[in-house]
Length: 355
Image (cartoon, rainbow, N blue to C red; front, side, top):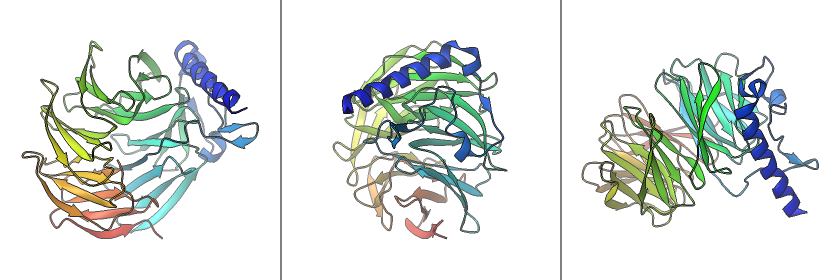
């Protein structure tokens, strides 16, 4: 029976992806004025999250968290893949605004450049939803197949890249016309880690199963691999695109990579089970989110020296965001509260979203 269920889910994933690429009616974002809780169980190639009436996540053994901060730094939207909802927190008033329910395995959240909406992927439902920050309702839905995971977007929000860890692909989506442009193949369980460099000419995709990072030329789609990072997790790229930083839960390090040669310059020992590798906008500090250490390790991105440990967190992973002035970092805890970190003082000053 178990094998039959797995097969059924894989068929749903393949069918949904094929539908997204070949059927004009399924390709377009689906419009909706109803709530997320109602709409997440609609058709459009999406798996409903149940098998024989039993709630059955598509990939229940793969865990991650996600948080996005609005461009005006007023609200945060957060989730983890074991939750059935998103949490919206007012960062200035320290209060929970709402919960958006109806999800099964929410994976990655991104704000639109204008802050009027945000997207969330759900690997069980096989969709990327666009949600209004005015109504907190689902506005549009794009079916990309069960297994859709990490997402990245261009600065203007017109192009979206979506990993699919089940089909080992990355889908390139034209957001203006609401259509997939192409599907890139050759990956090996691409999960949460997917980032564009500042020039937007290279997309970096982590391959968890392949222990490598794939650099994709966004014009030609030619690729090259960066090897030697086992159990690769979160990553960041510096502003001029010369250095990449990637966390590894295998050996509890953050690798510093020279992007021109693809060689690892240094492996920095950090805390236990690092998932995040978040570089501040001013590029003066990098935080690794150490899940088992309940801490952050502060790393000097220039020298590769681990300089301090920030405590007072609960199971931090990839979800680490900095303010535009690099003075504040917000870190998602495992209970979906948000630790506000003073970057200069390297300490947690508040825990937000608990009320």
